[in-house]
Amino acid sequence: MQRRASRTLLMHALRATSRVLLLLATDVAAFLMARLALGVVQTSHKLEPLDAATRWAVPPLGSAGGWQMGAALVVGLLIAGAYHSGDDWRSSRRIFSGVLLAVGLVLWRDLWLRGIAPVIFHYVTAVVGLSASVMVSRALLDRIIARLIRMPAFHSPAERVMLVGDPDDPSCKRVRERLEHFGVLEVVGWVSPHVPVLPDVPGPDRTEAILGSVDDLWNVLQHNSVDTVVMCSLVDDEQLKLLMEAVVSAGVRLLAVSRYDRIGWVRPSPISYRSLSFMELTVPSLRAQQLWVKRGMDLVCAGLGLLFISPLLTLIAIAIKLDSRGPVFFAQERVGQGGRTFRMLKFRTMRVGADAEKAKLAHLNTSGDARLFKIPNDPRVTRVGALLRKWSLDELPQLFNVMRGEMSLVGPRPFFESDLANYHEHHFGRLGALPGITGLWQVSGRSSITDFEEVVRLDCEYIHRWSLWLDLEILLKTLPAVLRRTGAY
Image (cartoon, rainbow, N blue to C red; front, side, top):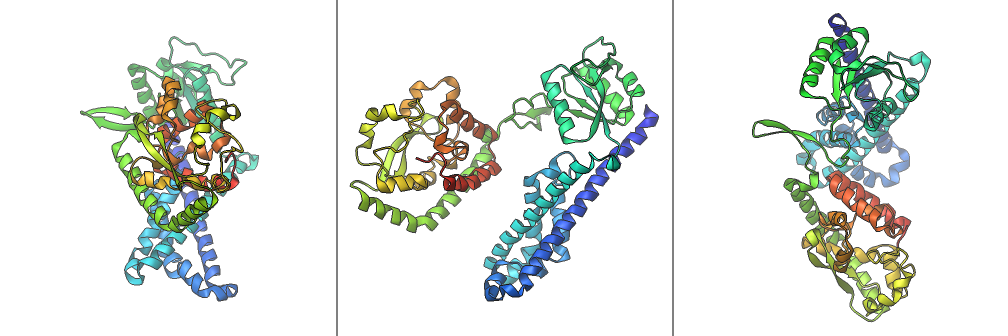
């Protein structure tokens, strides 16, 4: 087994080296394609009427197309972890982070030579173009590899994997299916954590045999050529020690599935606390520094948003006053984070006294749930109000709520205080974050989702999975959801 270890280690090294070299070649090709496209835009005679605008919007070849940018791209992706093993090379977040760093390294000198305005504009266009080129190239590489490995002519030696666990355990079956789906491998068999276990033959529901127990691992590895051992079940301390000793001697890679992988919204991370090693299972929304970053982004975006759309807000206010009698804004008591109430602002879309008519129209509520009061073609809505609701423009004044710290740009939608009386225990989880102008529920269907349990599930999923990237993803999906007008009334 130890004599075979050097060959096993060499196979792992060759796979890792091949992966890095292939990714490097793909990224260089992506850079050259982006450079070619940039050159076409800069030199095309068809763009001569727009020459001034083109020179302003498109980075010059010297700063964005030179060898410095190519080298910086590789360095940025390397620092961002886009060449790591596993699925990190497929991560859009890592690719985008690497490109952000690479373009910043190259254009930093230009910031002092050409002024801040053109450099910032060139920075944005270069990041967008280069990120798109790298992501598309890597996606194509992924598809090409998936096709080639299924062709006999390109069949490389499959990675031989042995699983530690019970093959009849649903979680172990899921691990087995995921491994097979995402990579070319050959499952040699299973090792059971239970003792004593005699080797068996594959049953009708599985194709791999149980080769033995963990206590017999040395003998199992000796008689089976294995590259990787995947531990998908819990083992005790003695068995773990034996596992480590055996795989180190055999030169075999050992992977362990987290015992907390079923809690999909928890991100286990190793930390040291009081000189002891732990896996931290705190969700991101409970980390104070993350909340400060989210609040900072809310203030900046809401402030800039109010500044840029102030003419639109003025036009809407005038239209509301000309269309119907009553105030421009409508303030309503809603429940926010921790059950605290606040006055949420909206443009008025209904006639004055509409709240008093709610009980009379309860039979028209399409959701059948008083906590989700939704009426298509609501007779209380004014002509301008219908247009504002159609395009979700009535929500814009909530930017003032964001500035006051009562709401966030992204979060669970605030509900009425009277609804709390009908909440069950798990419903209160959606009050664990600041309410938002938009959220996971809104981009998943808006008013077309009429099941309150589904609304709660989406809101809690957002809180558990929260990250700045998720906020950005929801914000980017909000505009298409508004334009589709699905479920908007």
